[in-house]
Each structure stands twice: as structure tokens, then as C-alpha cells.
Length: 112
Image (cartoon, rainbow, N blue to C red):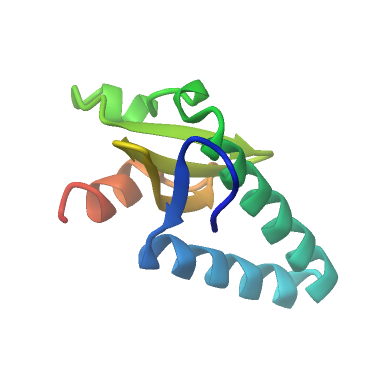
């Protein structure tokens, strides 16, 4: 995932796996077409970070822990958790905001 802009957007292997799991789930419970649409929209939201990465807010779950290094953007209920390092934006987590994000973030980001 890379787009023209002052920042390069990179998706981690974990976040790529999140997209693949999401696509499989939506395909199974709705349709392949719906899954493709959702993934396209989430990827478009991620690509916008190449231009305005600081636009995202710090996730409340991280603020509660005093961690301000990560930010989030979203498309509908889906959240993209990322960090800006120099001129790169690293997307670490992509998930449904209706799930238990606190546990997901603790497992994914704080155990790394």
C-alpha cells in the first residue's frame, strides 16, 4: 500500500492478515463483491495517510495507558491503527471498531 505524497504508507504483516481475515469473513457472511468493496474502502482510507497522517486521533485505549505514539483513522466501523516514523506511516492493526479493541491493542502493540 503506497501512494504519492510526502509520506509512504506501509502495512505490517499483521495488518495485512487482518484485511485477509476480514475479507474472508465478509465473503462468507455476505458476498465476495461486498468484501472487495469493504477492503477497497479501507485501503483508500489508509492511502489518505500519505498526505495527512497527523489528521488521525490517538486511540482512547492508548490514551488511557498514557501512550500517544499511535494514531487512528477509520472507514465506517473499521479502524486503522498506525504510527508515524520519520516519513513513513506504519499501519499495525485493522479491525472492526465494534470488537474489543483494548484487548487487541494490548496483544498486538504492547507485546511486540
